[in-house]
Image 1 (cartoon, rainbow, N blue to C red):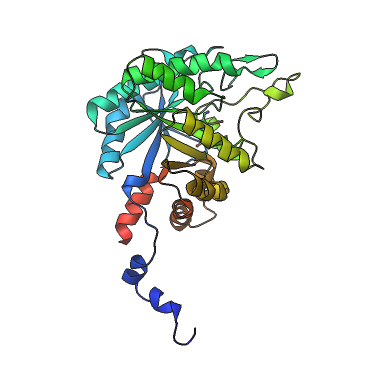
Image 2 (cartoon, protein in one colour):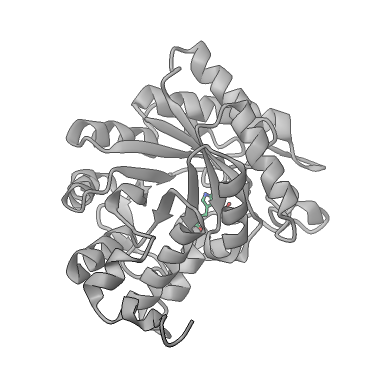
Length: 327
Ligand code: PBG
């Protein structure tokens, strides 16, 4: 009790503050998401995401070098194809933009390559799977997700990151990988992916939003498959079933509005836990309203403090540079 205890003694000196923090961030915690666009030769700006670009494939080595300079161990790659169709066929094309990026990254770096496996960037209607009159058809979509995962593994992906929120997607992909000799290719599942407004800058980044369909309200958004943001219990069920189906890493997404979910999952499960600081979080933090350097660090630390082992962040390079400057 005061005056014997003066908690401010622990805060008087920067080096002592560092000693007693109990939370730290290091390059080992980060995965950098990268967008590769098929028909572009120059990096393109993304609205509301300053410092993030749609990258041409010829920049693969530059990006790999930037990761290596900042000791970032992993990238998560997204593709923006030249052509879309009803089935999203280019998502599993041998020479699709993601498959090419994976091969190039493996040639020029020692990064671990994670590949997002979903259909929404590749389908003309912007949905995460095959649709019929009732909505997104779960089991028909699984077949395509298997094909995507297999083509990414064939190209050399170390981890597949299925993000479609189809039931059974982890099991289907795990079985397909195993059957084809890819038993060592991992799965980081977007397990607790909420139907969130925080994805909107991403959707303009990859030019894929669910197309509005007048007489099919269930196809208007992703609420029939992504998690209802009122529910923590369902998030726990999703993580549990993904781990049972063979996921190696479980992910929660978005991160900052779901810190309670991260903390609960950390307590409940021992598998590595990733949190995705999504495009909307990044856009708000970089909007210029706040001092972005501090706001970014503060909210990323919060994600780590809540229990995430891995943080997927567009700001990874900036954060790591900042950490180097302040220590
Ligand atoms: C694709 C996908 C999305 C994100 C990652 N993978 C968008 C969505 O589900 O609509 C969002 C990432 C971000 O906002 O940074 N299924």
